[in-house]
Amino acid sequence: MNAADKQDAAAPGAAGAAVPRLRAAIVDLDGTMVDTADDFTASLNGMLAELGAQPIARDEVVGYVGKGSEHLVRSVLGARFSADETEARFATALERYQAHYADINGRHTRLYPDVEPGLAALSRAGIKLACVTNKPHRFAVALLEQYALARYFSVVLGGDSVKRKKPDPQPMLAACDALGVAPSDAVAIGDSENDALAGRAAGMATLTVPYGYNHGRAIQTINSDGIVATLLEAARFIANAPPGSGATDQSST
Image 1 (cartoon, one colour):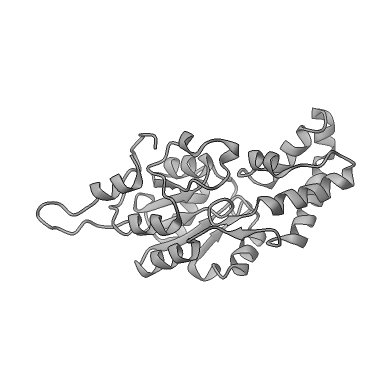
Image 2: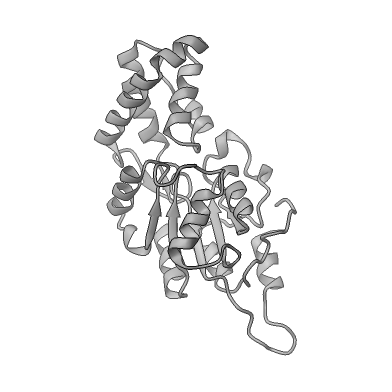
């Protein structure tokens, strides 16, 4: 079922009674609001050059993005070194990667279409907003500020803000708690299976954008409640969707 179908299902009934709306949206960052793959690529290549290892291209990076810096670095090393060498080099490689990333964060990025209008529309509709990402918190805040998006979010949680990362539901539940809303009154918006899995496990509705990374796999493989072309389209749907709409719907998009 696509988002338009969900919106029709959420319309007021024949009696004209108003349908309660979702109260919050938990929005992913990398691949959902900002295309950051070239930042990842440049930072990883700085790290790999220091290790004397084969450089990496954007297409390979996209296949690893979405599960946090530790997973990203370990995956890149694992494709270039033996298991023992990967473990021996991991701590140094992670430190050097994050040092390079701190130097270039935001330099090779672009905002996806209709992100700011979508967030503005959600805000005008009274939807509470949180950004939940597996990117380290300091990098996430700096990137949101660069694009003047931080003003829309009362809560920003990074991969180091709570004990576990997406696809675990813990950061989603923490965001709902900080916003003062029940998970059933919130929707998770992201570009990858991680976002949908975390949202569903938390008891939230889920929406997916089609232009991000999703570990290099087709967006149609994600079991979410709908694919929305942009955050602006998501805003139009969310403003009319009832709490819990689709949160337990297991149909594939």
